Image (cartoon, rainbow, N blue to C red; front, side):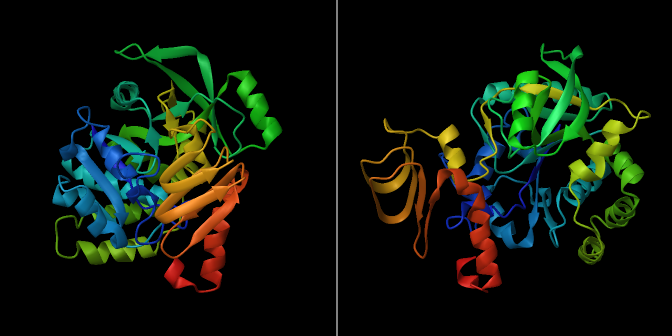
Length: 363
């Protein structure tokens, strides 16, 4: 089994700490080490470092080399331009197919938090077992609240397959977009839905076949790129090929179609609970980072007076917060963010405004 870690995200909702040159996956946000480093470390020994591939843009290649010095040189796959997760996964599959078409790929985000490493690795092993049998498998997180910020997976619990380690693997009925609150509440009480973790398992051979079936233009591009791997013209063919691709997620481009196609093996999901958090915005730290007796999550030098349920991150200097509740306060060298915790998702709008105003020094 090989891990393919997608490390091309921008992490705009963690502004002002997250920037173009140092996005979320390179930061220690509620963790001891940067999220990318923790992603690789928690896989070992199930997937050792020499079986790890990382896909990212050229802008971050040097930072990845510094953070993961044990990563084999040819295991950092550089995308010439961002094109979402379908081309990202396809590029990794093209490389792995040359090594072993039946290689199992564990496709993982670089910037998630996992609380229980052993439970996580056990779930990965169960998913890999079904992937070796030619199926596509995803991980679904058992929901704990009516969350509107995640996509969902509707699944059939009646006839699970049991992996060798005793973990149940169920059939996916369909993928569901982010729901409104009332619908999310119904999902929670029905016990028929899981949060979509964005983690997938399949062989290189299977995913390339599905890309050919559902995204033929992408497949033709990957075939051209794959034929030049190891040759001097690889960078030029890669750049030209990616420039002509549309930005499409693997969920939309392949998974939704494969789930509905009765001629393909069933899509599978492993219902899981291993302390998962997608670390999607500043307020998410309250779900897993250690809080004080007043419910505040603090990093750096902060002085809190009559303050509760706040997220305070002082990257430089001292942050003083007085008489506040339910805020996010982030201070860096050149910027300060203050917003209600329940609007932490909207921090990306600050980045959008800075782009419109051409405030490059703050991006």
